[in-house]
Image (cartoon, rainbow, N blue to C red; front, side, top):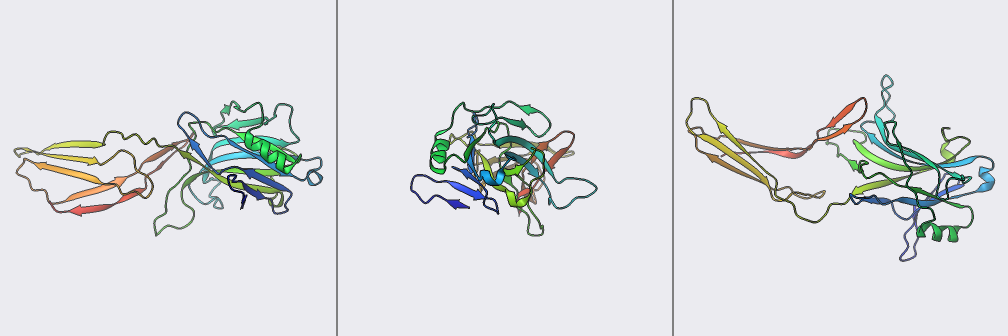
Length: 284
C-alpha cells in the first residue's frame, strides 16, 4: 500500500501481484452521516495489452464474518454477505459514465443505483494524472448498511474475531461471475464508520423496586450512567444507589455489562453477546 507524498493530496493505491491492475482511492474510511453515506469513489488503472478482449470488474462486498473462512463444516459457511455491488470498469458500458452496476443487500433484494452523471473532482484529477488507461468507479452504500465493527477475542480464544468488514476487489475475467485468479486481482479493505453527534443526551438510568414475602418494607435499587455515548477505549462510569427500607441485609452487589448486537438474516438469526465489562463484587 502506498500513499502520495504530496501535501494536501492523500491517495491510497494497491496493485495486483503482476502489476497490471492498480486501484486508487482518496480515503479508506467512509462516514455514515445518518442522512447519507460518503460515496466510495476512485479509479482503476489497467494495462490494455494485458487485458486484451477480457473485462475488468470491481465489486464492493460487505460481509458479516463469525468464524474462519477456511473452515467448512457440512457445507456451513461462516460468513454472510450483507451488501454486494458489482460494476464493469472496462470496457465502459453505455449505461455508465460512472458505471452500470448491480447491487444487492445480501438477501436477494436489488438496490437502485445512485450515481453522479459526471466524474467527481477526485476522479478528474486522477485521470488527468494517470492518463487514458484510468477508469472511474463509484459506489453508494445505503444508509442502513451495517458499520465496520470487530469484536475483540478473549485471551483464551484463537482465530479471527467476529466482525463486519467491507472490501473492494478488482479483477480481470471474461464474465462477472467467473472466479478470478490471485495474480490478476487486487483487494483493498475499507471501513464504514458511523458519525456520532456531539449533542449530549439524557443520562440513562433504571430503577427497580423489590418487595419481599413475609417481610416489611422494600428494597430500591437505581443504576445510572454518567452519559449516553461512549467511544472506544473510554471508561464507562456506573452509579449505583441502594435504598434498603426492609429488614433484609444486602450482602453482595454484582455489576456486569452485556452488549447485545442482533444480526437478522433470512432465514437465520445470529445473536452476539460479548461481555464488555468485568464483573465487580462489593459488600454493602
